[in-house]
Length: 125
Image 1 (cartoon, one colour):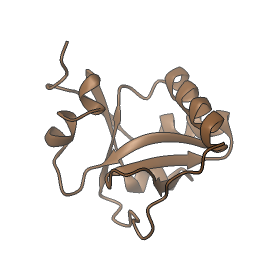
Image 2 (tube, rainbow, N blue to C red):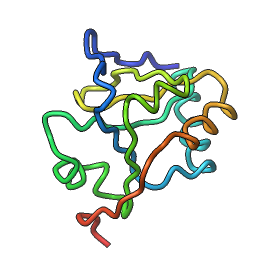
Image 3 (cartoon, rainbow, N blue to C red):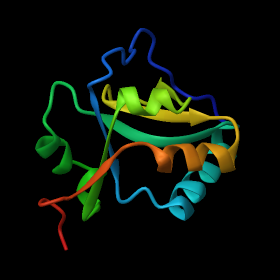
């Protein structure tokens, strides 16, 4: 198992901050991604990017989000309201992992979050 790289002091406290996830919040894809994450780090997690110090448009043009034709937008408030953790992971200061302990309920809680799906105009078909 690998150790996760957590960034100290990088906390999302503003509930209005938008989080971007590539693709739809499809339960099957989220489950696959969470299981893959668990196989590496020993905990369940789903990658998201915080829209801060950049716009959604700017993030949509960058890897990995540019690979997706649609983007799911959530807020920090809504993710925390369903009992998820937001952990600052990786080297990218905008990257966070939505963490949870139980695969089935975690995926369902994330899917149930208030969110909207928008087309990614920068997706290269």
